[in-house]
Length: 77
Image (cartoon, rainbow, N blue to C red; front, top):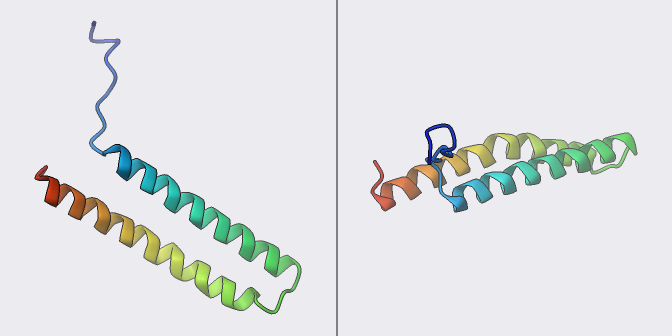
């Protein structure tokens, strides 16, 4: 195989990439529900907004912790 045809090796496992996709889908779904609730003037809109804001901060932090601990226990560092 020539140098040009080589696929780059990812430093993330398949499980980590799947988890990242799940986090992105969850955030996008929460944003869509919050937007829909705000447009329809639902009484739940303020609480949904607070949950979306909290999830936007908490989910990436939890995902980062997952990656750190997965690498630590796998012995890659």
